[in-house]
Image (tube, rainbow, N blue to C red; front, side):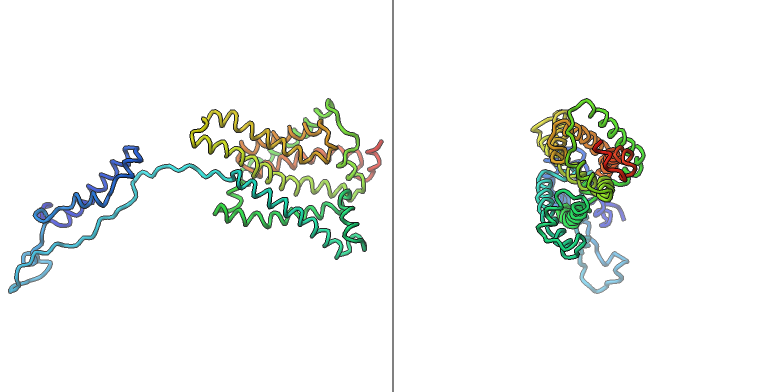
Length: 362
């Protein structure tokens, strides 16, 4: 049986011609041509019609057995339509820009609301458990403003509530694990742990040296809180190298910074601005704005003095660079925790492990 009369060969030939047509359209790098390419219409156009269709005569086809005595009937075998697969060269897709500014706004609304609710619930729990005596809710609320022994457990409780809510919420919004959407990337942080810790320590000692040339407040609120009791000082140290950098990095370098950067990248994709503008203007502006917000958040702790705020903003710039360079929020947490440790290290040595807090006033 020749290829011209073999129905299987004819079917394979039609299939091959259609696939070659689709491949030619894909290789042309023209989205319009691919969009306009109708593979079914091509099939119908290439399909042989009446006189060209190879027929089977079951009388002469041994596969159908003997049909003596029956009228010769020409039968067209039904092979079905060929497979219409995707073009072999799929068009590349831009990676999703998450988190964007909408996600950032939603995060801060949820976080601030939960922090406020969490503080009230935390104080209510302290009142019911009588961990600080039989004090009223109002008295415990006033004490939480300046006593680290009370305020830090309440703050930790609020932070846990924030995590319990935002992790599943944004996991559902992004349709992927929260750690991937926020670019946690713990693996990179583990690989560079020692380097990141050294960056944090160097930043702390460098910022401390720079502070000698700037006006610094006397006895800022954060120092007064530390002087209340040795237990409160130790709690501030532990909190400052664990929960505080974790949530602060998540908020400022996990949401705010990438939200701003991604807004410039979105404008770049729309050809509103060039890639050079995104790189040399968009990213620096995002870093500076994030650092300004980060410094202002700490303003009450340093009596709103501009000297410490400049130092805190400088540290934030380092943290932003680490976050963008390594694409890892976890890396920023390590640097942040190491930096915070340097803030307590001097006090720890000066007071003999917080045993002689009165030395801070001499």
